[in-house]
Image (cartoon, rainbow, N blue to C red; front, top):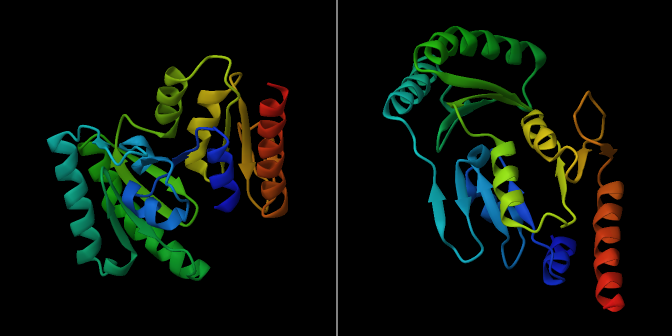
Length: 217
């Protein structure tokens, strides 16, 4: 957080894009003053001035999500459920392989018919599954930001999750994309950074480049 705050102070527009609800990410980030935040895979936008935008949620898809949450509660999975704008997630991080397979089987049985009937999207993420409304992903948030900045701006997107692949593809040829995880995997990202050291080094080099740019002017 300290390095990111310094990068922001030097003039870089820092944007957090996450599957988490925007206000939850605001509390977790620890960055002050807080940067621009896109939550719920780009459905929410919380700007640095505190203004908040929420995308349109079709009524029938809202009904499908409500039924999805109810079905898991009925199936005894209350503790694994997370409700968020435009989505319902089930988490299994920390459970055994057998417990995960059991939950997956039950979730697929409940959710696939709802996905098909209510035109929803079923996403894998690290540690769970999410059923959510169609039409918004992290790539959409990236495209919106790109349209708001100068075309010659230096842009980088760093992500660790499968849902970041939409953003990697959106930025292809327009900036640098980096997969940030301890182990590599197939990805559309340009480079792989192993945290924490390589991530810290990346931020430090970005900050150094900013400071040199200002010194040159």
